[in-house]
Amino acid sequence: MINLPSWDQSLINKYNISGPRYTSYPTALSLADGYSQQDMINAIAASKSRSLSLYIHIPFCSQLCYYCGCNKVITRHQSKADLYLDNLALEIAEQATLFADYNVEQLHLGGGTPTFLSAEQMSRLMALVEQHFNFADDAERGIEIDPRSLADGMLVHLRELGFNRVSFGIQDFNDDVQLAVNRPQSVQSVKGLISEARELGFKSINADMIYGLPLQTPESFKETIAQLIELNPDRVSVFNYAHLPDRFAAQRKIKDADLPSAGDKLTMFKNTLEQMLAAGYQFIGMDHFARKDNELAIAQNAGQLHRNFQGYTTHGQCDLLGLGVSSISQIGNAILQNEKELKHYYKAVQEGYGSAICKGVALTDDDTLRAAVIKQLICQFELDIPAIEKQFNINFASYFCEALQALDPLLADGLVSVSQDKITVTARGNLFIRIICMCFDAHLQQQIKQTRFSRVI
Image 1 (cartoon, rainbow, N blue to C red):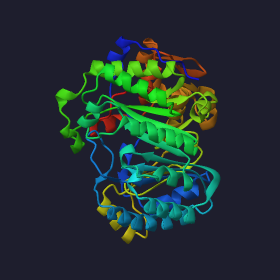
Image 2: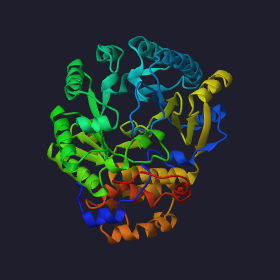
Image 3: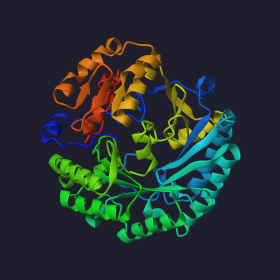
Image 4: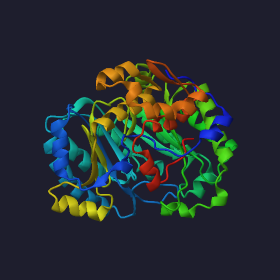
């Protein structure tokens, strides 16, 4: 178990800068044009894994949430989902042939709003993936749910289709906040859905929350988290809202004057941290919490937690195949991404024999080494130096001389401790894990020139 976070306001003022979330290394910002299906074929041939995690992106939403930066299409026309499934079927059929000797251990539907699909459309999609892929008997099957768009009987239908995990996008229980981000939803309906999911036997019930939204106050968000804790979800993600209206047009509908101050945002996270820990949750890292009997917490305590484009996971040995518009795959030492725009995705799968891959990066030996270091730090909050040296046949101090120099200020401020055998993130430092990982990131300076990241807290 990692050290319980220690709150030091002076360090937060000093180090609350922007940085990557490290769902991969290199991050998606390193992806370059010019990649194709042949790169997928080469990556599979070189991969040592024959276990698969499937991610399927459903881009449609019936209503625009003003805070959202996801790849999405706002529509109320259900027929658009039929057209999407027609094209997704082409991609599934093509890509599945490459993974005939893989077993699917994990399936996740994200978006957008996966539950935009009707019961019939969801049945069609699941029939497609089950027809073309080999699923392990105990495969995890998860789906993100917008409580507002869930049709009557859909939870029962999802359970009948084999889904055993649900993640509810709640964001906030406060009526004024919900209206300010164009996401009004009944507190009672959310509570009812979570109760129904538990009664139906879903093995993991997760909740996504956001702090830093318009009209939130430390007091109102504290009440929201108290209401959430009463519902006893298995896992909770409490994301920091990044206001980037120059990048995401929907965010321009949010008035700057309605946003909480930086100080209030920090207070919200501090309160949340205290509330979640007091309620018996384990701080997994960054913005994730899990019940101590949840497999994420168990894996972390056993030193077996992983992280990929689906966040913290217990399936790090799996290759990851992304299907659908904008989806990202990580197969062996290659990261590959599909076309981001729907019309380009359709054209690609129709004219490219079922493949929509357009961008990617092939990991060098240096990338693979740094990815292993960053993953161990961000998942376990410590690094076993002799194990890394043995695995990659390096002298750590020599190879990472510049990274260790970059750690010096963090060492001086007590965020990390460094010995000959171990780098340990302290209680003062685990809120700044992204900054610690940045010290080992060889791609970062170029990425900083290209984009803006969210703040680490």
